[in-house]
Length: 452
Image (cartoon, rainbow, N blue to C red):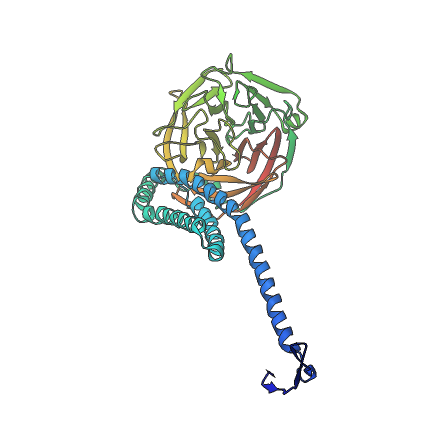
């Protein structure tokens, strides 16, 4: 008998036709070390198998989530593809989409390395197609059509800017030689509208004409009383103290109904001199209501397909209904901010001028920007510079963009915070007489000090 290389000779004897022998097993030792080693291997294999099963289970659970993300990104890419075809897309939106796509590529790659089945292969191909489309949208236009459009827009804006150069530099607009806004204060005025905070849309401020002697200290409010969209009244206070106390006001009613052609549409008004300027009811027109003569004059804004009737409202996070046309005032005069189909839904700025002799309202100049209007929560003018804001959170907005009509140059690097009381912003306007910014904040009236 032999085992582990050792032999043992034994003697047997036959009993009852059976051969029997006695074997001394003490000479063989049990392989404990080998047994323990094998046992460890078995336990390690069981642990690896359990871990692999958990990974497979987790991957199966994540697959529907990743498929949903791909569908979501694909759906979000479709409007960008349309905007790309029409020249409407925003470079910022594409960059953010690219970042999200990179994270998705990483997740799909991890799961594909674990499972490597038909489903993960399909996901990888779809993500690859998404990446190709995004790259094509970013690269093709920059090299071809976009550069041509940018150059053309730059030349057109340069021509408009040249028209703004005053004949005499010594005395005109010297108060505008102060650069961009550097910061904005916390609210210096906080007040509920005199109509109650349930009226969430409108505009307000101080007399904006720097040369208006008789009305220079007056304050006004224009609240949209019909569906938060239309209005036909103006309330004026002769002093700041009266405004704060909501006493001694004078009301002006300039149309017989909210649907009259001379009624106000959207939170767009500004009191400038003896007249209120605003967006006219369901039209591409800006209206001028004369407080003394009680008459209304119109001018049609230039451009192909001027947006109105909620076509190009301020949006970013939530859209402010019917905020298509925004009338503003600054040190240089009156402005209209809007968007056109011809400029692919991007912001357009036109300078307004009132002719006292002819008693006509005119548009003298127009600039086109590259900022998509629906990517903006609001805007205002300061010294011929367009400032745009975006939503940050329920209690904050941020001025993030500036376009200088004097040079045609843009600045996308601003980060000037604006505090709010509540979420929605109906209107923002700057007043050149005191450098304050006025916000109609869903029924609350806020004022800020702009610093240069």
